[in-house]
Structures are given as C-alpha cells and as structure tokens.
Amino acid sequence: QGGIPTKLADLYKHCGDHQQPLVNQLQDVLRNILDGFSHAYLVIDALDECANREETLVWVSRVISDTDRAADNLHIMVTSRPERDIEEVLGMFDPGAIDVGNTTANQDIIKYLEHQMQLKLKRYNKNMREEIMSSLREHAEGSFRWVALQLAELENCLSEYEIMEQMKNLPKGLDDIYKRMLKSIDGKYRADTMTFLEWLSFSKRPLKVAEIAEAITVDFSSEVGPVFNGKKRYSNPRDMLIRCSSLVTESEEYLLSTHVENDFSIREITTHSKISETSVAYLLQFDSFEPLTEAMLSSSPLA
View (cartoon, rainbow, N blue to C red):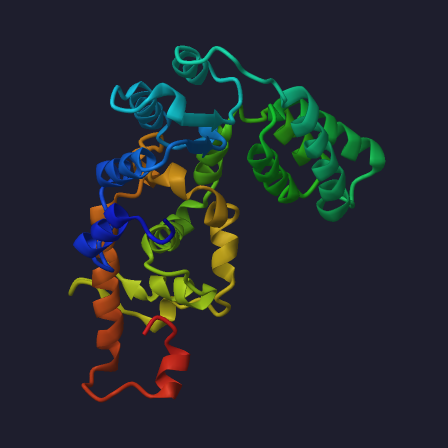
C-alpha cells in the first residue's frame, strides 16, 4: 500500500513539529518499514564521507545480521572509496566488490576539472593548469567533494607561488581539508564565523543571507548580558560568505562530529541556547509591545 508508513507517522506525531527524533528511533522505524516488504533495497552512497562512519557501520552490521529478517529479503548496495574499516565490516557479509574508482569516477573528475580550470583558474597559463589538474586527479581518490573543496582553496591563491605551495601540502582527506579551512580563519573574525555556522547548522528552515549576517548583531561580551548592537552589522550582508568560505555548504556534518577540534566544535544544546538568547536580545531592541511594521521588519531581517 502507498502513503506514509504507520510507524513513521506515529513517530512524527510523538515528536511534533519542533523536536528531532532520536537516531535509534529512526533506526527502529526503518527496520519496521523494511519488514513490511517481501524485498527491501537499501542504497548507501559515499559511506566513506559519513561523519559518524563507525556508528553507521555498526548499524549496517546489525541490519544485515538481524536474525528476524530472511537473508534473501534485504538487498544493500554501498558506494565508497576502498577504506579498510569499511571493507572489513562489509567483507564479512559479502566479499564481492566492484572497483569503479579507476574508470567512471576518474573520468568524470577529469571532465569536472577541465571545466573548473577554465572557469576559476583561467588566469594561469596552460602548463600551470595542467599541473594543477594532474596533481588533484592523482590525490582525489574518486572524491568529487575533495576536489571541489581543494579548488575553492586554490581559487583564493593570489600568485603562482601560493598555488605551488598549496599543491606541495595537499590534505589527505576531507577531514584534513576542514581542519585547514577552520585554522585559516582570521582570529579576529572567528567568533562571527562560528556564529554563522551555528545558525546554519541548527536553523529550522533555510535562512536568507541577510538573516544569517544579522545574527552577529547581538553582543555577548556586554556587561549586562546579550544585547543588540547595530554597529556590529555588516554594511553588506553577503560579506558573511567571505567569512565562511566553502564551510557554508560543505562541512556541517564535520562540525557536528567528534573529529573537530574543541575550538571549532558545535554542540546542539549549547547552540540552541545561544540562538534563543540571540533571538530574545534581538527583539528587545524594539523596546515596545507595539506590532512590528513592514518598515521595521525590512530593516531588521532577523525579526
């Protein structure tokens, strides 16, 4: 039968609109849904890029080894780079694997690189672009995400010398790229950048650039507690994209994982508390119980 599975609908009613279900609750619902089909198919893409890979592998193992489910009812396809921990876990259940890393993936990466070279790095001569392509292709290991992030870093280089220095120390994986990006944030702007990333990580809906930029107008260093300070507002809201660089779209999972250093980690409870304080302090700037006008709302995006 079509429609939303009963267990999933029940979980939504239990949690409501404003509460995220727990991971184990979602896992239980999925197991229940799988049991409702004579044949169930699971596709797990880019398992090697999962922030909580160890936990995910444990869960996959439990699903596969579940004695209550007939072995021939469940079909799983996993795509990943050939990481040892993934091969060891999945190899216990099925030693069969198809290696496409040196064919399709690399060919697609080459096409992507050729396009990006012309788009982002055309100011450099042909020999330089070919050298960049060759090095990135060699180290990519089939990961588009790695290539895209590294190109974003190279685009910020201002000379051939900076390009070559960057190429000498290419990060080994996505985590290394994220660490480098975080450490490269100017200390003067780190607080602003972390505020932007916190709001992006836990907003209940997609935020507009102007709304995100407005989050730093609440001053937490004030002696009287969080208070609105219009002087902290960026003259151009889009400047927040400069502060965050590629971190805006690429690294939310990493920031919420256990891999990140303490100085840059984002914790859900702490962040929700900070967002609540910011919201209240922001609204208190109006110092009135009168309804907000359209003019007030247009000049105060976060209201």
